Length: 235
Ligand SMILES: N[C@@H](CCC(=O)N[C@@H](CS)C(=O)NCC(=O)O)C(=O)O
Image (cartoon, rainbow, N blue to C red; front, side, top):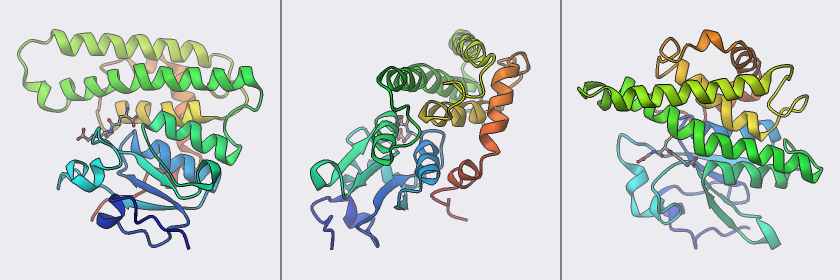
């Protein structure tokens, strides 16, 4: 029987199935990257809900796994050399799970780095910039009188969407024929920008027909539909 008791996070979120990958998350655009990946690959896992309304991410137990107080984070009880592996940062988790499952990342070295390149493009560009659009358009930043930060992030979001749209021209997915971790990293954020953030018109989403086409194909995948709702939010 696998023993995860050395990880303090398991005190607050006990593992019912300690032999499975433990996922600590909430269905946000970063969180669902990992639940979608786990659903796509079929790797066995156990989800645990980290609630922001009760500041779970600031608890000592959560911080013991991710000192940066952000979801998602995982523990794989059967990591490299058969030892448990704790991991945070969704991009790192996607690469790790792709390698573990032998799925959703090209097997050849050049293709592999191409996938990682686009994951980094999401992690360093799309995620942070779209997140700022949300803050300045929908949340507290909406009240700021000075609109220059808002305009700056809208401009950046548009620029990044144009880069993505150009990349998708003549391609089914970011890497071409092969659906990959690059798509799983990126499209939850595009969906969130036009959905939850209600910023579609603001960024002129209709100008980006390739992005819209691939977003529709992404959300139509059954594993994506399941992953978008894991862990379940409280009723
Ligand atoms: N770069 C991190 C970002 C994670 C992130 O920003 N998570 C947000 C939810 S989408 C969070 O946990 N926020 C809680 C907080 O900041 O207290 C990753 O990709 O894993």
